[in-house]
Image (tube, helix red, strand yellow):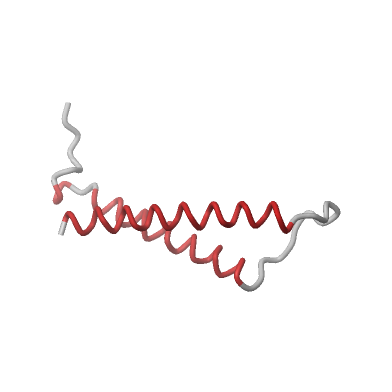
Length: 78
């Protein structure tokens, strides 16, 4: 179970990294009009934004679960 948790964390981190990079590249390309400071996210851009939030929350929760002493990696060895 511990290995599955770590593999899931790795997959989520890669997926979150890809989503963030795609969003940043998309902003630079679509923001040609300098007069508009804010624009509403629509369509695929909105879906990617919401997906990034959901994945980051799941990643946070799984990271907290993985840090529990139950899994043995949560204890700090000095």
